[in-house]
Image (tube, rainbow, N blue to C red; front, top):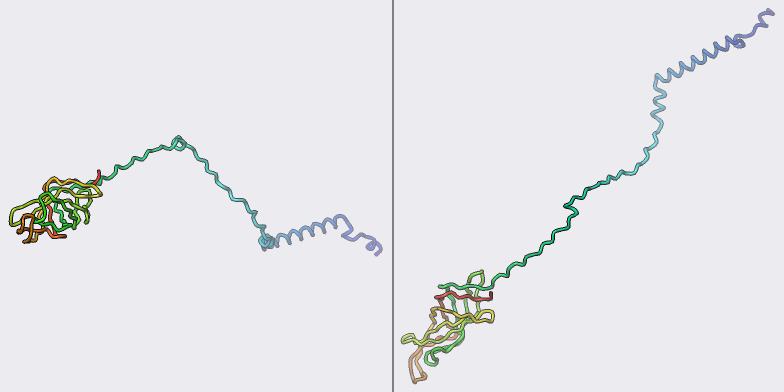
Length: 213
C-alpha cells in the first residue's frame, strides 16, 4: 500500500501529458470539422456586412479630332448677284378693247375738230407682265367732224399712266351719242353730243406700250 501511494499520477508524467494534449487537439479538430460541415462558418461569412464600394469619379472620354485641310481653309466669299429689276412696262396689243367714260359733254354744234377733252378708264385692262391699266386712268381724246347722221366722232391721242403720257398710234373709237337740235356757231342746226359720263369704246389697231422700263 505504501508503494501505491508514492507512485505519480498519470497526468503528472510526460507520456500522460502528451496523450492528454493529443486527445484535446483531436477533440478541438473534430469540433471545428463538424462546425465546418454544417456550414456554421459560411453563415458567419455571409452575415458579415460588406463595406459599400467606394464611389469613383466618372471617366470622361476626351475625343481628339483631326483637322483636315478643308477645315482649316478660309471660307469662300461669294458676291450676291443683284436680281434684274422687273420691268413695269405693259403692252396692249392690237385688238385690245378699252372702255372709257367722257369727262365732259361734247357737242358737234359747239366744238371744232381737234378740240381735246379727257376721259377715264372704267374697266381695268390687262396687259403683258400681269400688269393692268387700272380704273381711273386718263385718256386724252380729240373731236373729229363727221357727216350726218353721226355728226361727231373722237380720236384717241394718248393714255396717261403714272403721270406720263403714252401716245396711241392707232385706235377706233365708238362714242355714245345724243342727237340735238339748237343753236350752233353758224346758227340753228342739228347735231349730236357725247354726254358727260357717256361710254366710249376704244379698240386698238396698233400695240401700245405703257409704263416705265
